[in-house]
Image (cartoon, rainbow, N blue to C red; front, side, top):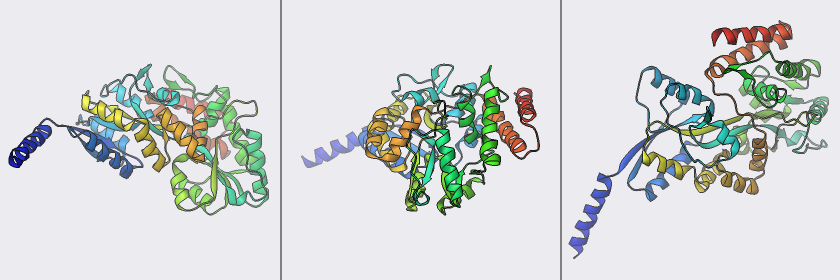
Length: 382
């Protein structure tokens, strides 16, 4: 009898594996170990689906090379939302339907009003507060304004510290201020970014005020910015939430705040750097896998250990109730800026804005001329 049972078990096992399907998933950015753990759990509950997880160090480069060489894509890949324009233009990814997610994530992965990804998580811009330098200085509330921000930076400067660290020529940070003066968006006309609007010029003037007039903001290269905050040279630091785990591991005494609003109440919308899974092959096994990893339980598990903002609303709510960092990130997401995914924005906008800010803030070119030339560059190379 035992022999019969053993033979039957072997036949059953061979049958399961003979009909098992394999899906290939390209994964990138932080959380490789944590995501592998979730894949391992998926295998336990879905023995007939095997996931070939491949870590891609530079996802955008890999996608571009695969497109250019007409190479083979995986079943699923984790991509940034601003990569969608390139992928939809090449007609290599499939639309998705009925994915439950927070509104800002839903908008992140729309192209021509069609959903193209299972949103997974995001990093979002926040203001890091170096609590050790706020001795006797009240830490602002989450509802603070630009005036509060400036006054706090001024006090920190008068105490011998850097008021705020901010990379002045990076479009990643300028985008938030640009959108604040342009009704919450990066202006575009027929898919072409527009950078010489009155709102954009106001944002640039604000930068000049912070860096050159009041001198309460200081700019370095990225690693120097991080080091200046870690070594307690600066009281505030505007950067993405992805640094939270690093600062926690260093036992820094810090907290985070949402971006302030303008004094008229309009938010300075922080950039939402969202990631989501796109589908290259219309495979039912791939959809089962994505339903599993984007469930509230699995997103809370992944994001809770990596300090990513989950796309799943239930997971976002749960983590926000348990942890002050997630509460602030969730507040920030309500006003978040979703960047355009157009080809012109991806390939031309950043270079034009970075060059223009350097020319204007260094005094090498007047404001209006600098941004007029930036627009001419974008329009000519579109």
